[in-house]
Image 1 (cartoon, rainbow, N blue to C red):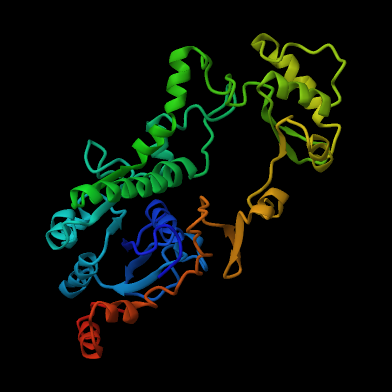
Image 2: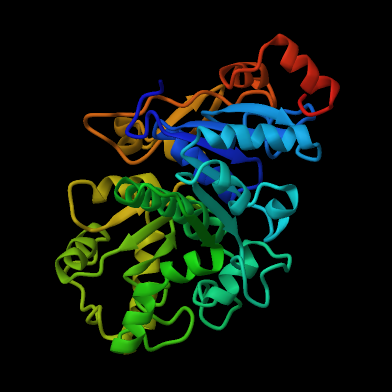
Length: 380
């Protein structure tokens, strides 16, 4: 049995892209026994990337779900599982014979997690889309960017991973908790639009309270305020400054060597253009690491802007083991932390279909049964 707070939990994953695999990665990281159902074709992993972190920590079987025998295999897996997760467009699983009704007929206690962009219904339910489209209609894309410029795509972190995969994992765990009292599974309908919209909750509150009055790039937390922004240093690198509170602002003024100067009041919005110029000029006097060193031991809220590839070597991340090397690829470690049931370092991704015999043997298939499945084209 794997280590971690979810040890003993059995999950069946129908191989997909980005958000659903991320949800399964999180569950596997925390100790769940996740079996990924891949297509019965050779390959390295879900995305075709070597050592893809999204595929880490779980076993994989190769199944041809276009055969009756392949569908029956997935149903047999679901019979003994706690969770099934899929990320196809609405109706695809039903047409395969693996929809919630068919699966719950075999295992009414199973939590059935569904990951889509738009949701299982609505006018766009079956339309194509990607993260940028989902966060766009969720209201999560429009506020991101500089004043007077177009919105900037925030990678695919808000839709695919934050509002998508993490929200699905949370929903699955909530349904599992409810099952402890009802004894019944249910369908978790996770939509990236709705998850991304949920992430903007505080913006709606600030807007209603009048503390987010401006347009894009003209507010306190979107780069509009000179005390909450990024600045270029003398060596062409960047630092992040988040000195909102008066005490923190006072420390920043000292770190930048501006104490004693006649500075505008930092929360006076009419003075922000002038103050931004002063801060930018002060930051440009120092190389990044020298300025960061000046800020150490203070509450100036000044930190380096690191690339994902630099982040692992930062002293805080190194001390906490925030990144780990798995199969030669440095990547984020499982999170969050647990004091009694810490998860182990995840295994590197298995070759697609590599665990087919092992998993099916656990289901009760003998050598003759496996041979019959191969002859039928149901497994790799």
